[in-house]
Length: 102
Image 1: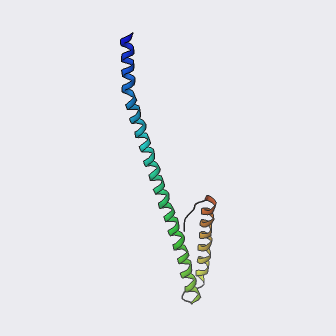
Image 2: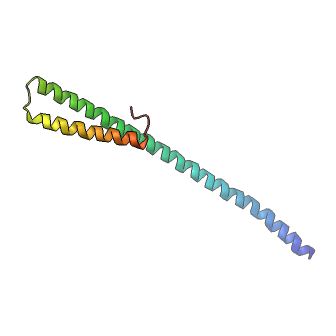
Image 3: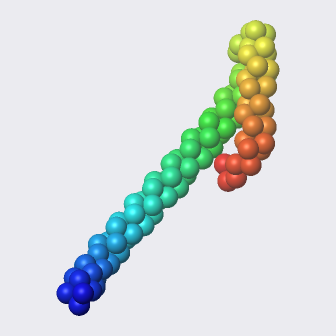
């Protein structure tokens, strides 16, 4: 019986470091996944910000060209559609609670 308890104690002692190593490995994997997720979120926010800035710039250029008579009246329809689309995107961003897009 004493031999069995000695073997059982040795086996338990041998498995503790293995369990700690597995937990440590899983913890590192989780941290890496969180880091990648945060980086992806940051990139997504930059894309949205770039899209909104480009949209506003495009709209301002089109307004200026229309005002100066360089382009025809059909452009007004495009500007209106563009504005509605941009506002829909801005509303969606606000609805989703996305922060720091500017």
